[in-house]
Length: 110
Image (tube, rainbow, N blue to C red; front, side):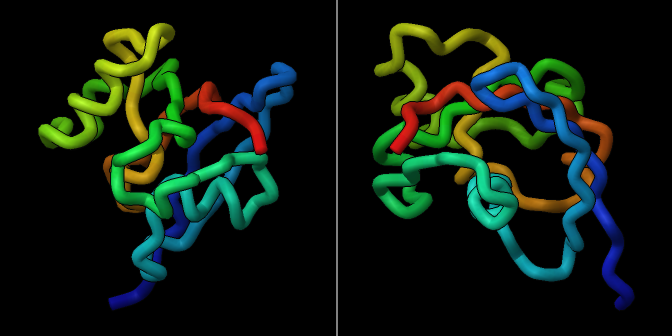
């Protein structure tokens, strides 16, 4: 199966917006893709939904994303600034559900 480019927008902590195209055949999480594109994301727990340092706010496309699992819900509940549109980037896979989504990086910096 041929890989497809997943196109989405990212706003960093300084308000700068970039558009990214990430192949969907590399089995990456959104957190890994953001780190690979030189966004400053701590990812202290390595993507296990245990630290919330990859917290993102979904500005557009929240309704297209897969539902949260219990571990992600529990971790977001610990954040004072989490909202209805918060997700953990480590729990989102680079696949067609991310196509057209617009996220803002919220987690702590290194």
